[in-house]
Amino acid sequence: MLTIRAGSKHLIREINQAIVLDLVRRHGALSRTEIAARSHLSLPTVSGITSELIDAGLLYEQATGVSTGGRRPVMIAFNAQAGYAVGIKLKEDAAVAVLTDLDAHVVAHHLAPIRKQAPEAIVAELANVVKTLAPAAGAHPVVGVGIGMASVIDRRRDVVRYATYFGWQDLPLAQMLGEQLDMPVVLDNDVNALAVAEQWFGAGRGVADFVVISLGRGVGLGMILNGRLYRGTGGGAGEFGHIVMQPDGPICACGKRGCLEAFVSDPALVRQVSAALGRDATIDEAVRLAAQGDVAVSPIFHRAAEFLGIAVANLVNVLNPALVIIGGEGARAGNIILEPFRATLEKHTLGPLVKDVMVAIEPWGDDAWARGAASLLLSELFQPALHRGDEDRPSFNVLNMV
Image (cartoon, rainbow, N blue to C red):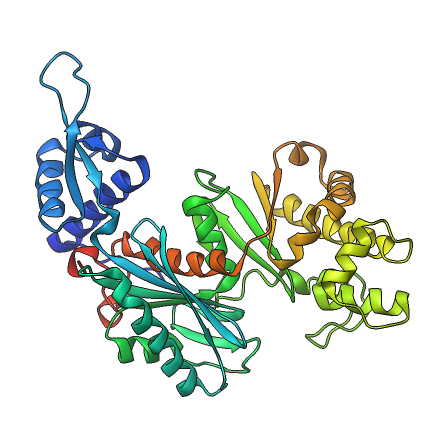
């Protein structure tokens, strides 16, 4: 049950600091009067908070703005270089990592192979990744680490409930790494990380309700609903690849039959194309043949696009999002599947709802996933701690970190 710490002047101050800082970060340079108007805080409160944030190096006074009749206002801007964050996309065989400033702009990259599967060994590898990137921050602090991985993550307990590629269960990975590095670590499903990235600096910026669908080895879903990432009760929301399309269909990697993933994931497409060609094929070859209109391969992609269109239509009928973003490795086939996907989506979506939704195809690279993981941390960094019991979690008050 959600409980709020009440009657705390420190908490109220922290909330107000977060409001002011996030306003300036999102909207660019603002005068103190504009901040007060947008935040509904009093001008004296805003003046006090901006002074604290300027002293901390998080805000700075910029050139004066345009006068509206009196003195020209001093503009307050966000200092994105006051600190840095590390974002890591944890794959089964590698850690793709980036160092970003506080506005998620990438300033350094690192790729480290993952040679062992034991949790302790991987934590040691991840700690080395962070230490390798840290010098690129110069004299500024690295405020924390965000990790995205294919898994079910329970953020309330901060544990990996189930790791798709590693087989871990109820593992406190964030705590283990945080203790080694002595800094906050945020861990979430990798598609959730992408959804946050899209919300921060992608197609979802300024959109209150949108979904991100990732196609590749699996099929994932991230949901931003009413401006907030939706994770579900135990972190398992978004297992979109395992909605059943055909109860008697092909066996899915999860062991069940007829899941969406068994029709549209890269392994499913490779299996179908290999069978059609009578020899082994790669996903790159399959995409190339489909793009060339191969009579054996093109119908396979067309059918996969129709399955995806039906599944997304059901999603639109339930959630009524303004935007559907499709990306991941599987988006390399975007132009091939787009037309049959759109036609099927329109056919199976309730009439008024299909007019509300836009579709964007974005074939992300590994760096985008890692940048999304950094955004996980940054999105929490600018939010006050409101839940009782947060005293036992790492402090994400940005003033304590720079």
